[in-house]
Image (cartoon, rainbow, N blue to C red; front, side, top):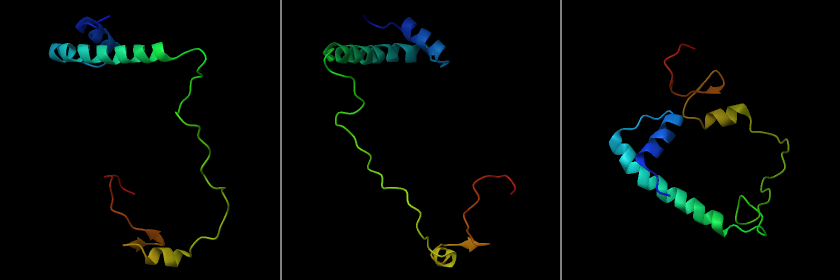
Length: 98
């Protein structure tokens, strides 16, 4: 089943994406290849193979969350490029007043 530019236009409307005719013509064959690839994967999937999210089993690699002593504030701020009022001083990135 080959996707047409009209099919892509319908999908674009559903996704609220404005596409030009050139973009529709360009995307139709690309989306068709993607759909064919998904169909091939679906053919390979057998009933005796359970669906998985990863090829290998995963285990939790995080350490236990334990409360520990932290560095003293003065020692931490001593390594900062700039500090102000016992806090790290960073450049303003928003135009809002504090």
